[in-house]
Length: 273
Length: 309
Ligand SMILES: Nc1ncnc2c1ncn2[C@@H]1O[C@H](COP(=O)(O)OP(=O)(O)OP(=O)(O)O)[C@@H](O)[C@H]1O
Ligand SMILES: [Mg+2]
Image (cartoon, rainbow over all chains, first blue to last red; front, top):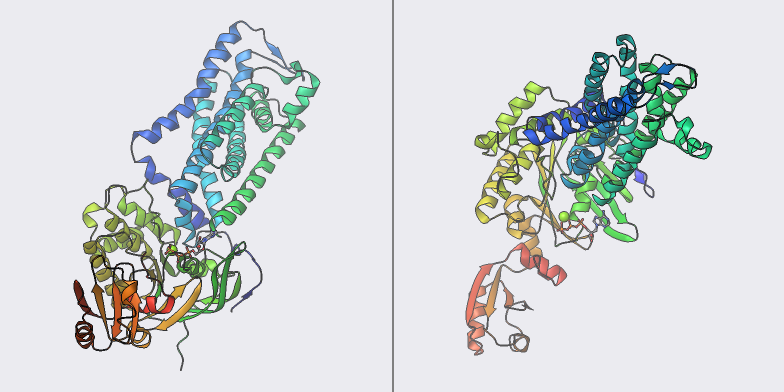
């Protein structure tokens, strides 16, 4: 009935409740009705990769010859770039929620303090916020895939196959972004994150196959997350999945697990002192 | 037959690193009681409330809430608590009504039930006409009332109120007290912290006086005053005269003397007789006030300091 406490054993996590995770998700529906500000952010996050696709994919594509991948398949430049923009879109959509919005709720408006006074547990918050972020990311990618099919940059069947891959990408970046957000000291730290995100965007085999880089750089790129996201989505969207595709997916699954676990622990350590 | 206490603590300690915020306290709060923690800044009131609210792990000692263990059964306990934290954490992204309905969902209440309770509670705290407003434009008193309504959304067995009226103007405080009094009449167990003695006197059946992490006195407001102070207190003011020099001359008037920066307090069961004695000694003050003794005097007596500095 009563424990005599020794040192600092943490408050124990009970069974996770889908109902409470759902409640954390639905907290985010209210603000959507709150006016245009949120929607501007939502829509701009979508258009960024689309503009890259149109300007670079089509513009530069007109100057560049077709691209021959290592497996011998030949793609137009736009076909090569489009899946990378799709993966980036999934990353941006999820991370917009789990970095800026998460940090704001965590540090400024104390949403999570309020939640934790109820039966809601830290890990349920992490799950709920991640699922919400993924929903947002998936909206972006569903529309983006539609555009790719319309522009004949992907076959319909392969576009359908690529959709769950983009969901996984959203989960992975959302989870890791959220984990980073629990470590941020202030808004200035987000500049670093934005820069890192942009560097990933430029160098992850997005605009050129990484085989063009020196071997040492290739190895570094192969360790970074967006490379695997682009790889997974490109293999599926262009219809050439193989064992490497499975490896890319595994990398992303690890990101989800580690990101969620870390976020839960950090929320506990920071808010349940 | 003994009623099982809602809160039971023995030797409860909370340390943050080397710093001890709560230094071993014993508590028993019975169902239906209004129980208070009275103490100055940093006494350890909030730290104690957070342990009771199962959002902070005790460092040492035993604690049971609603007969359960806060570490193992935190989820079950929190399901039956209503919490009004010291600093409002209402959701500024949501409307007044949404703040309640969203909160109801965290307790697993169906949407329709959440809406029904939200309407009822907004009525109770007199905010029905602001239901569709955002939270930011509300006054401090309105926010506090909304936070209390939010704490009631799960029909809790135990309500924790950390400084419910700090920072409010007298009118807003009285409205809040009146609402809290009604909750108490409905049989809700209230645990509150305050550094206002009048608040403790108004609301609490029983209270503990806390100072530097320890409980220095315990009892009903009346019994604390009887034990630790006299029936009446005389407040003497002497304009610019240095007060310390008067201490000796007033010796023996009343049972005790406290010299504060701006006034002298004489503790006496018969205040008027004490005033007469002061005049007899030719120490006529520039102003004089005879009043009934309060918890403020109890605190001063116990710790040598005033509650609100
Ligand atoms: N998370 C924390 N980390 C370190 N020290 C803390 C923490 N929380 C509280 N303390 C310290 O513990 C002591 C007691 O704080 P607590 O908030 O419990 O006091 P309080 O009685 O509620 O005071 P107040 O009337 O100002 O609200 C203070 O000295 C405070 O600085
Ligand atoms: Mg406090």
